[in-house]
Image (cartoon, rainbow, N blue to C red; front, top):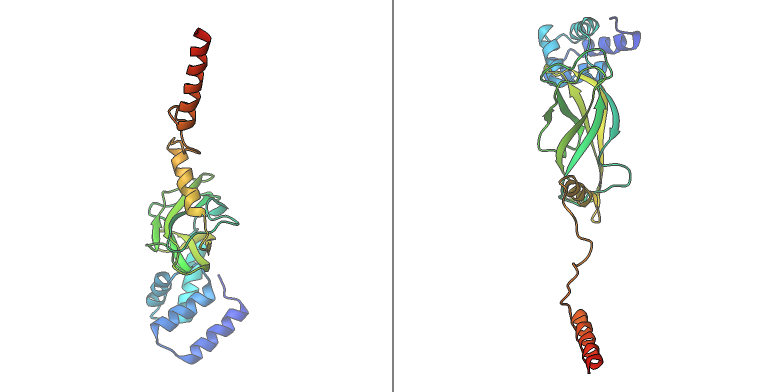
Length: 227
């Protein structure tokens, strides 16, 4: 795959810089190629081409043209929907419903990777079971809300075992507020799924004071009728 004129001009500018800083070269390659390449993949292609930026990008495009990546599309956000908020420092579960909208099965070892923003989870990679073409699944990640109220964004993407991203970018857009109710909503949903009954009021007590008084009154009426 050929690099267009704009990218060619940028490559020439980078070549003129003559940088040998590996971190700078990795950053430049990712800017030119886009979000489909992570740091480890960029480092691999640069190292394979003796850290020559132009050669590494050409190798990457050639590899992409002969190695088809899987597909993934986001269907909906199952949790953290519009109008929902979470209290500060609260554990919750973020769930997305996704589908394999391609022609190939996802490879074994695929995972959901954190790629940017604020990482609200304890990990940066979450294993995901392979999905056949046309199948749908829910992907859930345990997360914790920050201590300060505000809006937070976290970006995630599916990745192959070798670190190549594929499919839609999926987001967590989290509102943290003191009066957030999402954690309570998730707990109630969990109780309901387990078949628990959540009481909505105190149970009836036949020996309560008002019922005892009524029973005594009925007993007196019966005694008067008997006499």
